[in-house]
Length: 119
Image 1 (tube, rainbow, N blue to C red):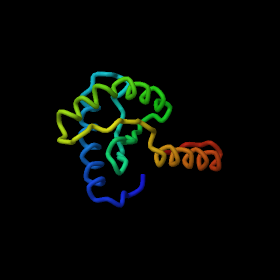
Image 2 (image 1 turned 135 degrees about the vertical axis):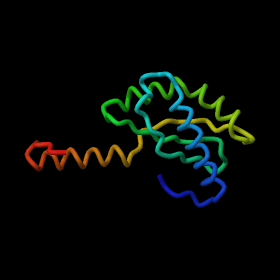
Image 3 (image 1 turned 180 degrees about the vertical axis):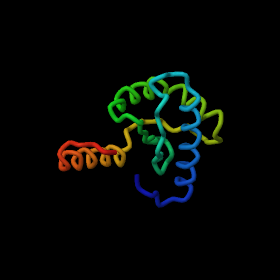
């Protein structure tokens, strides 16, 4: 997730991340119980936004992603009622690449240590 050059877009990203994180936390869907919204990257025209997420168990990323896609209309509706914007951006949910990359590195390190997992 890169730093956006436009201050307005950075502010919108922060607001959307906070609002969406709160909405996901309040949802009753058990597939979303351990989901964390890690960031948002809105397009410069604010019509689209990629929402990055992670889970405690990275094996649950796909399940969480399906739950987020199913909840997207509800999330957009609620964002529209909580955030004053001309248009509510289309939301696309993606696993946070930094978290996935860190898990891969950890797996390689475990393998190099001989498979013992002291952590």
